[in-house]
Length: 393
Image (cartoon, rainbow, N blue to C red):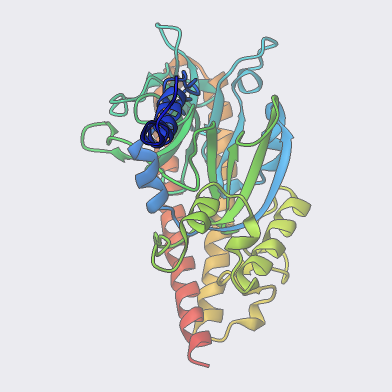
């Protein structure tokens, strides 16, 4: 059979399209689509806290066994005492609670199990050598299921504690509240925010106002059984980081306390605070205010200046006011000694004599508290006058 030239041309034109069609009919094996799970959204409370991170100068940090973190906290007697609950009551059985005892030794806040088996906060008053029945701290219940690690400021009103519950962003968070004296309870607590709180456990916030040194404990980034005790300079006013000045990464680092050196600024405040901290650690619970039996003092003027002699006062009349302060301090010490004696007599006295002793003790306690307020007021007056003089030089 002869094929015409026209047929050959037609076949030549059709064949490429036919082969291309056959290629298209081949089965294409599709690669499986891998779905990357979306990152979980951050708790908006954490985001908000980070944006409101407080500016704090951290002086130092110490990693220590969790059961011995109190060894890293040094306080002047004026700031009260901290202890474990089992040591406070003399129990051989280890207990989870902690105790704050005020300077006078007549009022304590402590944590212990309640009727539901949860750790809760209680307070008790002491008359003589006897503690009254504990009373649960009320007014702080909303959003809180467990409370521990109490500390009360020298004003006797401001209470810090650590708590778990819906108001916490981690395990334990640190909270602040104040006494509502009219209703004999406390106001609703406020979460202290960052950098003090995190998604880990943060607790035992304490401030030594005499030394102007603060402490708090956390287990963030620590192995099991260890905690980090941070020391810091308690701020006089709350200041937050400006988001226009700091990047998100810098802000996150400060909120999480990744590097305490980032908080030092020019280092002057930290250097002065380190000197106070080392002095406090070296002397234990030695008073940092003046001693009436010696010309050697350690009176804190500001974060950078501490006087060691009465001759260093520069403000007019401050040397006279300081002598008055020393006199009040001596009277306060004598009153405290007499108060302790009265409490001992009360514990041994007959029931018929206790009513008289009770009145004397209560009167002495009120007088002692009056001295404390007067001394703090005079101390503040001296310090403010001295700072004003120094600033004008």
